[in-house]
Every structure is written in structure tokens, then in C-alpha cells.
Image (cartoon, rainbow, N blue to C red):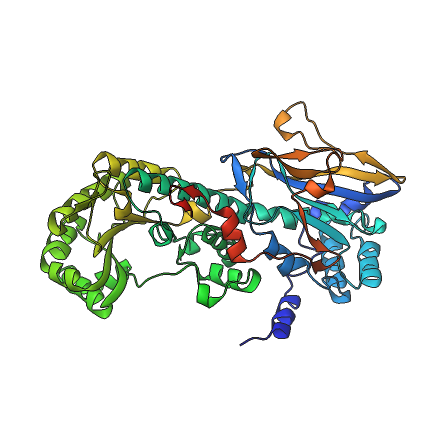
Length: 487
């Protein structure tokens, strides 16, 4: 096992782990652009609107612990950044790298960043157009540092947006479970939407961040980097493992038996895994034949007598159509019971999982089609890949980081933008507080309100993380209401 010191050395020795180059290029020139005698820059992060009316804040703790904690400025890193930036910026007319500023941080602060970050507790759901994080410098000579960190800190948009969308999908699923008479306990909900997105994202770090965001809301995942992230950065312990998976077939493990051997491939899955859940992709050739004649006839006794559940996975066709068609076939073969609302439910030994074409937009279409044909929502679970972890961008929730106050000549001044060409990009002014007013949450600007009412918590100060949230705490904040209480 790699010890903490070895892990730290591995991180510090990576050429990509240099805070001075983890920024947009033009920011290397901004230290010269602030008004003379600027001593403080105070900025904030928000969702200015977007696809969802609320944001479930998540992911900042990773960025802080991964990139900001401890000594992040060293002589070696200054030299490396200086060489890169002065070669990269401009046409050689001048040196743009702020060598004096970074050397000051190294000498005066031991390479630790003189910054305070305050943020919403992770897992809290906040209406859009509210402050989610503030950043300010603690050393007057480092006024330029606040917005230098914007590029890195704004990347919290990604895990936050995944978490927000996943939570919205959970609300849809719970709604249909309730409308079709199904239970909404922990096990009834947690594995209804499973993360299949690892291969569909841009990097393994993206898989870790996005996959972790999904696991704030659900418990099923095939994205192992997410488990590493939650374990290393959010205190996940293996005795409380989130993101569990099950043995499951892919097309290669079925088609390698050849078409005539498909039934033997299916039988092998049932006998290799005689207990528990097992999922088998069943559309390699003819999914209707697979459900009617293979699962529903030749292997039916093996399925019924097995200690566990077979999950049949179609992987092609129009999702709302194929799901309902296969439920009819399986219902005819295996029988059904009815829920309190009169909707049909397959026996516990068999279910479907739809893992193709699954998104925030299509889940309610599939569930509505099922309900219209008399099927309960609990008959099907979902797997989602690119639509869960990749099909979004910073503008999905219109995330932005803006300066709202600066101290110049010893006097604070409101700083804001208000472009006549887009009033949606108007930014906030002055010191900000996030407070509860009745049943809602609002942002107070220009220093209004009492600090005691501020929901923002100091999470980072001068190189030290000052507040950490655990998985359990975050999941509890992100829970949604249902008839049974919350989940």
C-alpha cells in the first residue's frame, strides 16, 4: 500500500501539478492590470441559471485537497512555470510571468496560498442565481492571486452539475415508483439509476469527479475511479461502500459462444453466479427470442430456482417501446403480481435494466410508457453513461466566477459587470452572504445581513483545509423527500 508521504511525493513530482500553470494563459498577465494600490480582490462563484432551478453543490473539497492544501509553490515549480509561461505568452517583448509575486508566496508563506475560501456545505441544494463560493486573498500583496485561481476552482461546475442532474433524475424515478404503487426504501431507490459512464468521459479524473457526484444520490456504479475519489477525499469506508456493482455480461462474453450457443452462454451466467444479482445483455441476435424462448422457456426453471435475480438487459431499439414489449413477454412467461395501484410487477427473480439511450429526458418517457401500459416502475432499473457524466458543460447551469469587491487605496469598492447586451450576465456587488429567508435561500449583497446568518462556511484558509464533509453528511443534505420520508 502506498503511504501518504509516497502519495504526496508522487503528486508533487507530476509536471501537471503546478498551481502556477493550472490557469488560463491570459491570467498570467493580470497582475499588472489591477488599479494601483489594490490590496484585496474578493470574488464569488454562482450558477446564473440553466437547465435546473436548483444546484446540488458538490466537489470543491476534492479540488482543495488535491490542488491547494499545503506547500504548493516551490522553487522548482517556479522555475518550471517561469520557463513555460515566458516562452508561451506574447512575442518576446516582455516577461509576463509574475516571478516576484510567486517568490513572495514561497518566501513569506512557505509556498502556501494566502487565500480564504468560503462555500456552501456540500450536498446542500441552492436555488440558481445565488452565491455558492467566495474567494479572497489574505495578504495585501497577493491581490492578484484570487482570480488566478478562478480557472481551477470553476471546474467544480462539473461534479456539481452531474450531482444536480443525478438528483433530478432521482426525483423523477421516485415519483413514478410512488405513482405505480412501489416501495421507496433505500434498496428500492438506490440502484434504480446506475453509472455506466466511465468510458464515455474525457479522462479518469472526470470519471472520478462525475461518478462521485452521481453517488451522492444513488448507490449503483461501474465507475471505480469514483470510489477512489470518495475514499481518498470524502472519507468513504469500505464497510459503508457506495457504488456497488454486480456480475454482468457484455456482448463479447455472450457472442464468443456463437449464435447457436447463446442459450449455453446464458446458462453459464446463471451457473457461474448461482446466488445474488446477475445481469445479462440479451440483444446480441434476437432479444425477443431470448426473452420468450431462452430465458422464458429453456432456462425458466433455473431462473426460478436460483437464489437471486436475473436482470435482462436489452441494448438496442427504441427504449420506451422495447422495455414495454419485453415486459409483456416476461410477464407472460414468469407471471406477475399487482401493486396497490393495480400495476403489474414481475416476480423478484427477474427484472430488466435499460442501459441504452438513458438520460434525464428519456427516463420519464420510458416510465410513463410503462405506466400507461399498466407496468410498475420497479420492473426496470436504468444504466446511464455519457448522458449522466459527459453530456453537459459549464453553461448547463451557467456557472461563473466574478469579482464583486476590491480594496484600492485602503477603501473597499463594489465591483460588478452589467453588459447591456446580456442582462443575464449582470454580476453581484460587494460582500456577499447566503441566508435563509423563510422557505427559500437568497444572496445578500453589498455587505448586508449578519455574519451569524451566513450559510457559507470557511473551508480553506492560508494553505489549510478548515472544514471537511463526509459522504454520509453530503448524502443526507442531498436527500429528496418522498412519501416514506426522505431518500
